[in-house]
Image: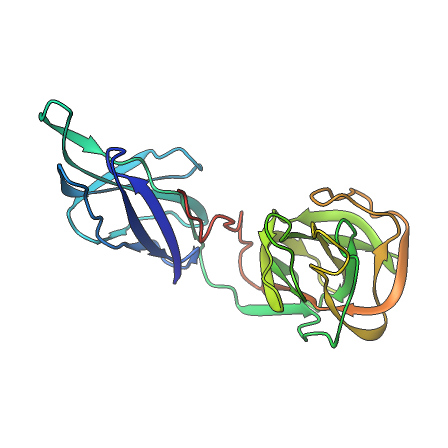
Amino acid sequence: MLQVSLRFNLYKMNKAIFLLLLPSIAYSSTANLAWDAATQPSGTTLLGYKVKYGNQSGVYTNTIDIGNVPSYSVTGLLDDTNYYFVASSYGNCTDTNNNVIPCESVNSNEVTYINVTQPPSGVVTLGNTNIGASVDSSNSNWINTSKVTVGSQDVNVTSISVHVGSVSNAPNNTFQVAIYTDNNGVPGSLISNSQSAILTANSWNTAPISAILQSNSNYWLAYNTNGSSSSVNNLNYDTVSNAGGWRNSGTTFGTWPATFGSFTLADFSFSIYLTGSTGGPPIVDPPTNLHLILE
């Protein structure tokens, strides 16, 4: 289960907190949702909640009035389909003339739910899952990579994880990852890149990313970050012959060249690995909006 905090105003008069619980990826046609009861401000009466959802972000074609209960199960969801959920509360409010009128909160922030046909037959990790004994330097606005080799089955990638040392204060505490093809032993063409995610110091940090990697092939996992100095946001690494390297020119954080370009191969096995599956259907559009708080 994944927990997401959702904040909203009840008739723009006060704040309450939803805790919406549901898996981001599921193997059944039912999404189970639950939340903490809203606390209404003076002059309002909470009557119930509405669950709204659709197949496009920001477009909610279905609305269910579930009454004043703290949970609901949405059934009959289609296979291999993305669903986007929000919630709201409704009730009676007192206006400035002391008239009692119906009112409804703004929508909570959105949560994505993906219903796939069947669970994958196997979970795969490729890359260096060890916390490297050393910490690199000057990783910010610079692309560092490590090579991975896919086995006898295609891999449906869902995320890439990295381990870093100390981290800058916000907003210079974000990172992105990407996957490049292999071109005769060096990074080639960009396959996929992630959106930005937040770094935690001295920890594994994971960013969702979607790609299908072909069996018996080599690829390069790449990392870039926006640290405020050369001493922060840097990858751990181990010394392994010809295991990684870096792009020879700096690359502004948030941009990924379609072709990797000039590259230095080095004895660096960065602490970076992918997680994916074999034998199951591809997972489309992994959610990137979990754990959001909308003030």
